[in-house]
Each structure stands twice: as structure tokens, then as C-alpha cells.
Length: 288
Ligand code: R5P
Image 1 (cartoon, rainbow, N blue to C red):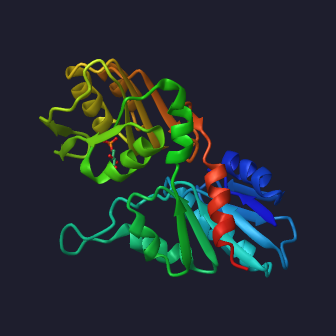
Image 2: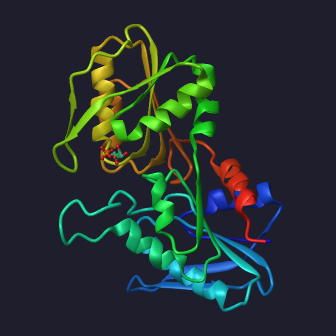
């Protein structure tokens, strides 16, 4: 079994090599002066089970993923599994207005080509895996996030909006505490409002968990609201930490005690590793 590390997911790929006792394929990935991508797989992968690990964010990594699949396929491997730690474009998972492209579906179609199995982590909505035209599954990063939160003695886990409530419930169940959600109203890409809602957080230690932190607008508002209601400590955790622009500043200024993300997108806050959950899901679904 070989792991092919994409340039956006090298760290997860190396953890997966260890988890699966696999080999790392030798790949050369670079950009031409005009920005186009060059991919060469140097290891001989004929007859091998091959696992390509690569995010589809930002856009340039979509092209890299397509080229990696193509190079691997030409080598006639036994199977190809595509692990996408962060599946970009997943938030447009339906038509909100006539004529819109459902980007989650469009991307899933392209990524399915030549692939026997797709595994992703916390897709924005679980049903997104059904958009793939090949076998696809996902794992949750919540069990790993919870391991990190365990020593913090969390009293309440909150979702910053109703859409994220299942994740908060999953974490609260493992932590053995209460869960609830805030009422978010999105005004624009960067601005959100929290509708007033009383939650029992006075003098309590709270964790707010979401799938993605992008501009930080959602989390900053959620932290602000919970601080206003008298929480003692507010831990902020997400699976995919995009942290665009001054997201971290916004969340800190709102009063976060600590910001935690997983390593699906490698950044300074990647305190939680998702490779164990990916390896487990991979073993459960492996195409043999
Ligand atoms: C939205 O439904 C997602 O779960 C996140 O809440 C959202 O993507 C966060 O975006 P931002 O950090 O820009 O508020």
C-alpha cells in the first residue's frame, strides 16, 4: 500500500503512512512560471493499493488532485483511494437560487473519476458524500477534538448555529455534558448576527464547536454572546481552520480562551490530528 502525499496535505499523509504501515510514494509536484501545475509520480505503483491525500482547497489544489489521480491511474494500480481532509466547495450543497451551480456536486463528480473510494473529514453536510459517483464515506473529527477538550472540564458544548448542532451533541455525549445551539443569522459573507437566546452558561466552561472557521465572523459573534451571558471560559474548536484575514484576531478580541483546529488544513492552531479517524474509516471501507 502506497500513500501519495499531495502538497496541501503532507502532514496528514505522513501520519497515515504510520497508521496504515504503508509506504510513501515519491512524487514531484511543482508549478510552472505561469502557475500551471506539474505532477510526476516516480514510484512504481503498478498493482498497488494507492491512497492519494490532498485537500481540494484552495482552487489550485483541485487541479493538483486531478493530475495526481491521472498519473496514478496510468500506472495501473490495484485500487485508488482519494482522501480529502478538507473538501472545499462543500458549502454550496444545493441551489439556493435558480441557475446556481451546486459546487459540492460538480466537484464530487470530477473527483470520482478513476477513484474506487473517497474518504473525507466532516463534510459541511453528511449527505454530500452521496454526490460522489463512486463509493464515498466520511469520518468525524469530533472524537479527536473531544480528546483535546477532555482536560478542560467543559460544562456545555454549543453549536454556533442550528446546522452544526449534531456535531455539538456528538461532543457533549462523549464529554458527558449539556449541549445547545445559538441562533445565527447571516447578513453577508463576513457579517453575522446572533439572535438573542438565553443559554445556561453563567460561570461555566463552554466549548463552541463548528465544522469550518473561515472569516471568523460566526465564532466571534458566538463567543461575544456567550461572554455577555457570563461564561467563565470559552474554548473555540473547529475541524477546518481556514482563518481568513483577521479571523484569529476577531475571535480572540471577542474573548476566546483558546482556539483549536484540526490538521485538515495545517496552521498554527492545528492541535488535533485527524489521521487516526481517517485510518479507521479507510479500513472499514477499503475496496477489497
Ligand atoms: C456555515 O454553515 C459553517 O458551518 C460555518 O459556520 C461558516 O462557514 C463559518 O464561516 P465564517 O467563519 O466566515 O463566519
